[in-house]
Image (tube, rainbow, N blue to C red; front, side, top):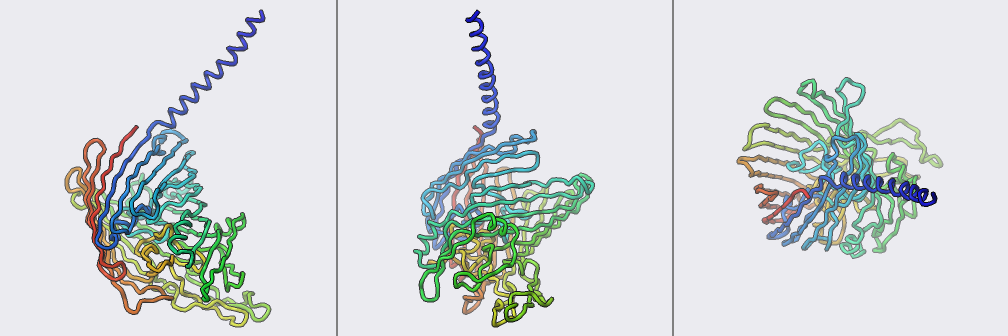
Length: 518
């Protein structure tokens, strides 16, 4: 009797274990199904520096050195594997062994991602595309671009348009909120030799929301997309060079209050540690974006705009200019505002032919950044109550190293990236410019795809450090990619720069890629 009871207890213990083991095996099988791999080998040789369009808009996986290259290996389980389920799991790793880059080993991507219905939660470093722009033909987004290395972050998102339950199918929404940390402090130490401005342990925040008005199911050809993109770098420890050559250290907030202020930026400025003014939320910037689309049977035409701003005042195109005197010098007393001109923006158009192989996509863009709220700036003080807004100094900041990561600007690469500087300073030295950009792509024959880029730019430097005379630049790219059987791709590209902004450069880039499924 005791033996029978013992057997029953044993089987009662083992059976759930076996069942759980099988369940775990089934779960492991589910989350490992759909694994993709990619191996890539790239080499670049140039006369001078690497031309602009051979290194820009590649998520920072690039170098301006005369000879450079890398071996890249990645593995990923994309979310689309679970597209039939209400939940999904994705993960990936992307490691690079570079030659003549800013790092000896690069972990380009390393992330885990979960989806429940339409929402996703991502942790780690991942490459995210530009919104409302062609990612291969556009010159780049003004705020959330694809020019710099990914920032490790926690990101909550609606990655695809979700149709709102009201609006009869005409209203769609997507967006994200993210917090992360910059990873380039070691490179900053080496690049500046700690004798110019640098920052350690800097935090990152971005958010964006997009509303689409249109009804594709109703076969209505017009649609309008509108959105707001905002980002900030804050917290950490900033080191800036004073006029006497000494380095001043300023610590930023990292607690819940700082995270909240990064999410809801304001204009609260206060004196701190002998510094005239310090924005409580760090380096704030963003863009108003919009895109109007017309979709016909054989072609699609879009017009889009990207209005960049550096702070809360240029965000709304006006600034408050009315304060008290004496003890009330910080008290707002009058309804008086400074209205800025509506100038700085990117305007673009994209034409897509649905059935033409020779020319499939054409993109044309006009970028103007000369105004920046005007050439004069002065914050009111206890003795000077007047306030004059201006000199927004796009992509730069007086405490932080500006809108850059690992020396590459995190927005549009036509803002000359700090990695080009030869004086050890991490700053954008050409942010006042006018540019025209053209991109064309097509697939003239099966397996062969081409891409052409041409950009003309006139630059004036910055308000604080202008050129003695206007500088010019022309950047070109001719690229062809041939798709071979069994997941092989070979591409060859020629790029060139002409002018004083980037110098005279030309080079060739060869890339071999193998991708497939495990």
